View 1 (tube, rainbow, N blue to C red):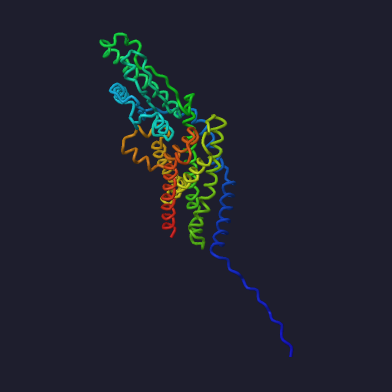
View 2: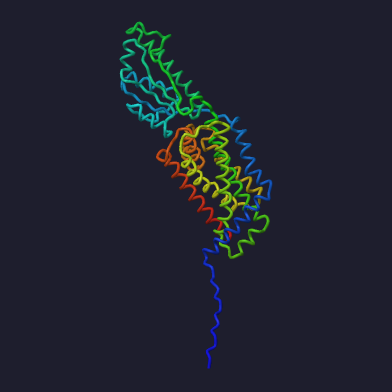
Length: 396
């Protein structure tokens, strides 16, 4: 009796959930990129519109200055030096951001953005005035914002002129050679980071952030709402595909496109408008990665509360208006009321614009912008998680 040959049946290996999720994400990503490529309107909105707006707005945007942060480096510490500081603050144009006896502390304050003007009063300032000699003071302006530096220059000149005239009137009986026509305070100024006082070096980085925000938020909202109008979103919700997989497939292409557009904008800023790039690109892109999470999260949130593309457009532009006006792009945040400044700290655009300007123009490093990076990371995580949770609750 011979043994019958054994038959081996092939066994099927069922893929794990992780493999299925990766396959679903890959298929949905391919579908998203094909859909974007086949729609000429979306392509123009993503790549042509931001470039045109950046080229136009960079030459048309203007702004005004309300007050400037003044750092006082008083090495004299006499009534005469305090009177000079009071002349600056009494004009209503300057707010003392800090005091020290050495100029180095003021330099650090200007580098990290806490001060816009440095007033250095040397040791012997009062003695020089008493002896009827030309008393010198040092004024250094943060000229990243060229227009603000120019306006602040005029404010400082007016304060020094008024103080010199007051010294001539008060001290004339004791120091007869002190003349009003030759004020006792003489000064020379210089602007850091933007020696030509070119306002475009200040505006272009901010406009770049604005356009990336507009595209990232608006396109995310419209992309998902369009699926609602077409009825495909309901079809996807009844499939075994988890909502998180669908969200990732929707946000990841726009996140990549946002980084590409940000790179294009940086190229225009550097090579067309000659904006210097002093700092490290890694710091800027770290901020861009975190900021786009917040921008896409806001777009996802808008898509959950709207049902049509018209509604999404209206909500997006209404929200972006508040975003832009409270970001420090056109108007200084320091000039806002206290309650408005507190609310503005919740705006991711505020922190990203400050980061880009500090790194590009002042050469700030990781240690100088860690607060902005932390704020961007926290806002991106909170906004995106809340939007995902709201979307999952709505889809279920």
